[in-house]
Each structure stands twice: as structure tokens, then as C-alpha cells.
Image (cartoon, rainbow, N blue to C red; front, side):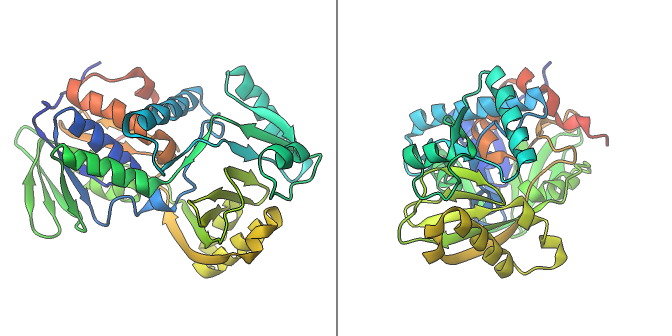
Amino acid sequence: MSVGCVQRSERVAVIGVGILGASVGWNLSRHGSEVVFIDAGQPGEGVTNWSFSWVNASNKTGRRSYFDLNVAGMAAYRELAETIGPGSWWHPSGHLRWAGDPAAEAKLLETAELLASWDYGVEVCTGAEVRRRLEPALAVPGKTPVLFYPDEAWVHGRQLVGCLVDRAVESGAERRFGTAVCDIGIGADGSIRSVTLADGSRLDVDAVVNAAGSAASRVAGLIARHLPMRREPGAVTRIDCARVPVRRAMHAPHVEIRPDGDASVVLHSREIDALIDTGEEPAELGRMLHESAKHVVPELGNSLIAQTRVAHRPIPADGFPSVGAVPSVPGYYEAVSHSGITLGPVIGRLLASEIFSGKRDEMLADFRPERFPQ
């Protein structure tokens, strides 16, 4: 199936410059489109910078097509690292996961069997083996089953966004940061014609990519489109370390831990997220995350909390991405998804190709924007 396409020389406004927007814009610019990056803040400093930034498909087994898309996202990262160079943003060091009670442990092992049957890399280790081979700083019990996913990774999202934007600018892309989109103009034929920014400027464009993350529903509303989104806030804490004691991302009971460069560690927990709406202050959420992490990596007891941020995840109402053209408004496209870190490079490539050619990739068939009724 085909939709209208944009000529390579035409102008495309990418609204929202997190990992999805940066990936789409870079792919468009490298193939000849005139790209305008627009963000109300600064590139990569929103949800992209305040997520666990874990590249995986092991947590995406609910729908096979979604799992396959995330596997393709993992492969797209490896290709991206070869194309632009791995730099300090890419950390393909694998991922560890274990549980704290028998029922959760049984479920993890069941998932591991399913993933193995889908040819996904997974190893079942013991806590003792993990401490000996992979992460000596962990306090995981010696006989506890630990899943090791060797092909998974974490990325420094803000650094990657900066790299992609810089490369796009070298190819002629324009930057409009620190100002929001307040209007999208539509011509008499119903197609996209312009965007107006909060600073008063008006840009003539041939297409718009809505990659505005948690603000995507508001941007869709500018063309009278209803994009239903979940409200799902998440708390992330960064702690400063004299020495980072872990090398890879991990899901321990009650807390998720990953490195964040040479002197920082990131913490997150779904259990702590559940307390956000009870009125707990971010500082207290950060303290609880730090306390949980110290039980897993005792060395983190000497670290200090640098900052805690509550961010709103960009999740369409049914939990799955909304990617592609909206046929009723020629020139309008969406790139809205949770797991944007994993999916950024593959969605960027597929959507840029669709914008150029008008051809829809079957990999996105289950995730089309028109599934949401208007």
C-alpha cells in the first residue's frame, strides 16, 4: 500500500528532537530532504535523557510483531554504530535480570524459554557465576537464577541525539530549539503547508513529523487529530560515583540499575513509579531508589544523588507505537512510542523511507496511526 510521498528536496519539520525525532530527521537529511528540527526544549534533554535507555526485545513478548520490531531495532543500532562510529553513546554490554521470589522467578524462566524458542540470545546463570564472570560488585545470592541477555545494550540517549542532529546539520538541516509549535497550517487541498512557532515565526513546509513524545497528543490536536495517550509518569535518579561499580544494565528485584558514563549510575523502579501519584516529592523518590540500589550493589552506598526527575512516557493508549502517515492529512506523519530508545534507529529508517517513497513497510502494519478512530 502506498500513501503520498515527499520529494527529497522538499522541507520537512520534525517536531520533537528526542531519539525518535533525531533518528527520523537524520535519515531524511542524509537522503536529501531539507529538515527543520523543532523542539520546545533542547535536543535529547526530555524523556530521552530521563529513561532507562535499555536496548532490548526481551521485555516485548506480548505481541510477536512488536517483539520483531524491537529485534529489528537492536540490529539497527549495530548498523548505526558502524555508520557513525560507536563513540561514547553505545554500550553493547548485555543485560542481567533476576527475581526476588519463586513466582516471579518461574515467570522469568518461562519467558527465557519462549525467547530461546524465538532464537533470541539468553543464558541462564547462577548468581555466583554472574559475580565471577560479569559483575563482581553485585550482592545477588549465589544460587539465584540470573538471566543474561548478551545481545542487549544501553545507550547514552542525549549524546546519540546530539550526534545525529549535528550530522543532519552538516547536511543542511536547520535547528529551532527553545520554541514550541503553536499552529500547523493546512492548505485548501487538506495537506500540510506550514508550522507557526511560539516565537512568532512561520515556516513553510511540505510535511510534518510529530515526534513530540509526551506532547504528541497536543501536536496532533493542531490538525484536529485525536491521538489518545496513556498517563504513565516515571521517576529516574542519577547518582554520582567516584567509580562506577557495574558494567551493564540490570533488572534486580525492586530496582533497575545501569551505568551512565564514567562517573554516574542511573536508577529506576516500577514500584517507585507507583508512588508518584501519592504525592511523594522527587527527592524522596530518589532516596528510596538509592536505598534499594545499595542492597544490590553495596558500593553504591558511598555515592550521592545528583538529580531525580519525573518524566511522562510517550505511550499511545493501547501501549504500542503510532508510526507512519495519517492518510486524511497528506504530509502529516507520526513517530510516537514508548521504548523509543530501542526503536529510534529502526523507526527513523522506516519512516524516512515511507516519507520518500510513499510505500508502507509491513513491519509497521500493526502500528499505523489510523487504528485510532477520529
